[in-house]
Image (cartoon, rainbow, N blue to C red; front, side, top):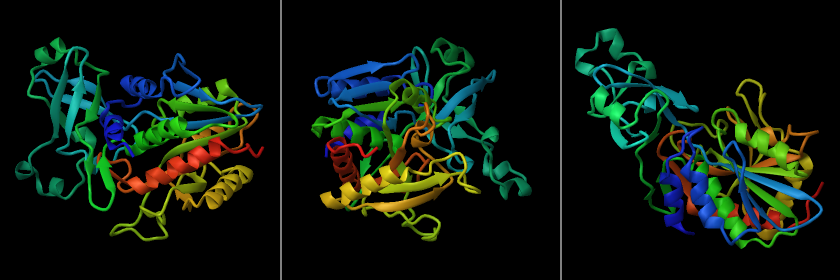
Length: 348
């Protein structure tokens, strides 16, 4: 695999609503490799390849979890809101990049020092509204850099290779999925009309997938995303059974923790088609019921009069942190499965 390309995808800034250069980066990789490329007014990027009576839509989201400037005080300290699901306890002391219109500024998330906290404060979780960003700049300097209310903020993290074929970096959710779709499109000789959509604003409500599925009107929809790998200390196998290095997961159902509401119950014909192709191709897969999250497939399935949909997920440790760990092997197996799906007859 091309680790340097994945590095570029991972390190590119693009919080929800401010994806900007991420679709442009993907577009530059696909020019000449697909039949058609276009973008819609919302920022979704479409890549079409192949011809046929039926259309297969595949989706991977370009946005990452991040922050947005909410207020700048008189001394230049920045208060922020969250874009996407971020646990408060992982924010403190993180290094960030504040993307002003005229300058990108590094900063750090701080709070009151432990030494001056009262005893009850020391025992409590520090919530994000008690934190701030320190760039070292004055309010006047921030204004001159084009940093104001509404400026996006990303986390300053580089892609690093770990032992045994593992990689760690920010925004693997879902730049790993974007990488997989790009590579699959380059390799595949589709027997259907395949439209891959690199969607925006997934982390804040599956927005890009909603409108793109209505625009394309596919016969089948497949989302490619990441999922929770539970093969590490302090998590029971029944809580998260997916393991790194054992291949991608095919999602049977996902959604809210209390009810699996708001998510996907994958279409049995599409799910069976994917499982059959994986078995014939010697691709290892895992099956998953995920409580607590969903993918673009949940939006695709509800478009038009209903679109049979399913999801493929790349196992990832520490999902929705800024240091997500994936396996090169799982990514490669996911790409192989996507290629085979593109080259097979659509089942419905």
